[in-house]
Length: 323
Image 1 (cartoon, rainbow, N blue to C red):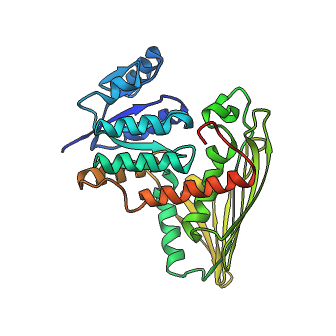
Image 2: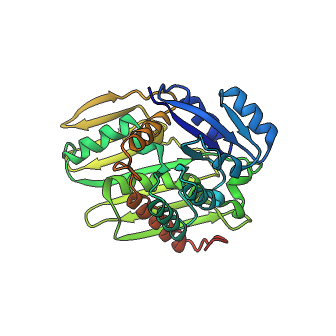
Image 3: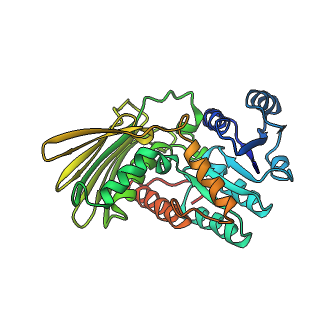
C-alpha cells in the first residue's frame, strides 16, 4: 500500500486529537511535526511516532517527503502558512475557520489553483457518518420542506486560554465555535437572504457571546455561540413532515432521532476514533485521484461559509487587524 505522508503544523490540543486519529488509518504515515517550541515538537513526535520533528514551520514545509500538511495553528496564521505550503507544492488541510476573512480565503484558493495543489478546510463535522446520513434524509424529503433550525455551541471558557479572547490571534466565539451552527444552517438551507446578529464582548473587543437569526425565503435558523456558559449542544431540524434532533454534542455526534407521523426512531452511525478520520480519508482520496479540492467540501463551500462569517461580523461591528 502506498502510504500518504502527513505533516502537522501547530501542536496544540486539537493537533493531539487529530494525530490520534491519524494513527488509526493504515494508508498514512506521520512524516513530520512542527512547533516553534522544539521541545514541544520532540515530545509530540515521540508520542505519535512521527519520523521527524522541527522547531520551525518552514523546515517542515521544505521537507521533501511531506505530501500533505494539517495546519492547526491559531486562526491568524492560517492564511500565511497555507499559502507558503501550497507554494512549496504541499497539499493542505487547514483547520476551520479557514482564515480571518473572505479576502484571505480567496488568496488561499488562488494559491491552490496556481500551484495545482490540493486544499481543503478542516470542517470535520461535514464528514461525520451521522451528518452525511442526515443530509441525505433531508435532501430526499424525509421530513418535508425545512422550516426551522436551532443549533448552539457554547462552553464556559477560562480566560487563561489566550486564543479565546485575543484579537491578534483571531479570537472570539464566532470564528472559534459559532462557525459550527452557521455551517449547519448553510449546509442544510444554503445562503440566507438576511442575517440579524447581536453580541456581547470581551475587553479585547472580540465577541464573548453571539446570537444570530438567519432568514430564508421559507425558513429560519436560530443560532448561538458563547464562551460565557455551557449549552446542551443539541441541534433541532424541523420540516413540514417531521423533525430531526441531533444528539449532544451535535457537531460530532454518532446518533440522531427522527420523529415523523408520531413515530420516533433513533439512528446510530459510528465514527472511527474521535472523528477526524473521516476528513483525513477524504483528503487521501482526493490526493490519490489528483484533485485539488473535495466535492464534499469544496473551495466554493469555504468561500460561501467565510462570507457568512464576514456578514455576521458586519452586523456586530467586529473587525480584525487583517481586515
